[in-house]
Length: 373
Ligand SMILES: Cc1cc2nc3c(=O)[nH]c(=O)nc-3n(C[C@H](O)[C@H](O)[C@H](O)COP(=O)(O)OP(=O)(O)OC[C@H]3O[C@@H](n4cnc5c(N)ncnc54)[C@H](O)[C@@H]3O)c2cc1C
Image (cartoon, rainbow, N blue to C red; front, side, top):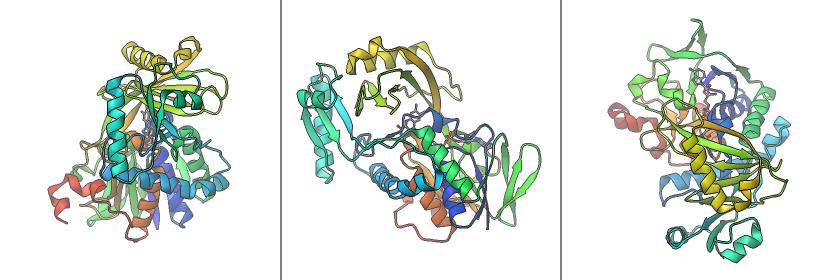
């Protein structure tokens, strides 16, 4: 079995690791450098409950995503030799006024009704956990089992583990399109015109996935949603928990750096950092942790989240072309869902029936033809 994976972000790399580990001859093509798009730009929060806006398929998928990552994490460390600095100190949602508090109380109610665990804190209790928090924080929710990973190192870990398992990675090699023969995948055509043959192809090209030729019949449409991030230098341990609020979030790295985010913008494929974006993030972050205003601003960047029209990931087989699989559209949750996506795709390619109900992420939901199958 030969597999070609399009895209060497966190999703394609995780898939390559699982496929190569299962004995599949695997090669990944990336049109640029590996892991340097959305997977590089992310904040690395692993917060299925903290980030959930309501009950339903997405939160269930994200909870399964966290379980899947927890399940393979030790092995990934051993097999890659890379430490992605996964901290499980918990995530904290904070409220600075009554409207934000009411929003959090509603969140508490639906999550408790759904049987999820989370803790209510007063402002003082939240400040005991995070002394740098604003004195205006009056209420918080703590999501104890959740955390943060260094997404760049996680992607590197998947790449290294995949290479050690026998996968090949080809940077600066753009795939132009899927090549089909007699109704099934035959390989891919690279932009230099060469044909690379394969039994299966996985389209994990992030927000560029629907631009790959030969996929149009499936109607999978993925667009970029820009997110900007500011990065500050801070003493190590300045913040022990990632903090979220409607005003934005602050995520600590072990090095001491603090990431503040983010925006959600329809800006096409433009990865510019803008004054409006910087101003909005800085103002939100400073209202959460006032001391941030005096810290050196080290860097700012933007990345493009891959989003489907319904904001759900697209994971599974093409409804029209045997041997073609999609693993894209992870929007705000690609880091969190990387291990689960890889497990599902490797399982499907091996002919296993997934234990999860994948109907909400099925590529078939976009085409009338596919939906009937
Ligand atoms: C600001 C920001 C904050 C985020 N925070 C979080 C977070 O806290 N937690 C979380 O879980 N997620 C977060 N995300 C989302 C997460 O980053 C994405 O969902 C995830 O990185 C998607 O991974 P990917 O591999 O699909 O895409 P990418 O990382 O974009 O990788 C796609 C790859 O495909 C390659 N490619 C494209 N076209 C071709 C082609 N024709 N041929 C070959 N290669 C091609 C690209 O070069 C690229 O390397 C955030 C995103 C942003 C922007």
